[in-house]
Image 1 (cartoon, rainbow, N blue to C red):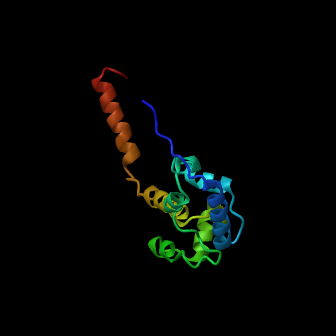
Image 2: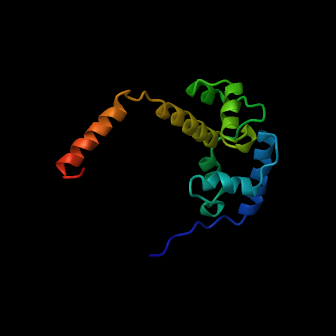
Image 3: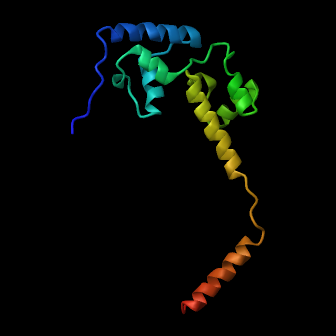
Length: 145
């Protein structure tokens, strides 16, 4: 079975350079081809998989604005402020400037907040005692001492 590969348009590199300049302007710092590859790698993708810059833009989504004015949905969805978002990232060894696209940031925030919520559970105070009793019972039934 032969895999079909995307055939970028003849102007793809030229269009990519233009796109990188646009993204850099919106984000407020230089965004490189490697930065785009890094974002795509989170989804097991590569620039080479895209036939056009339009397809690439669609896959990457909206760029985080330099003034962070388009992060309201993240603040609302996760009950965060700009300060608490920065703290959440910092606690996990990351910075807001590590992110170029809203989707990538949203996925990260989801991961960190869900990890916390799912990790918070109340353990049954009798668990250890009941486990020891259960294991002793099973061991006795199986002939172990």
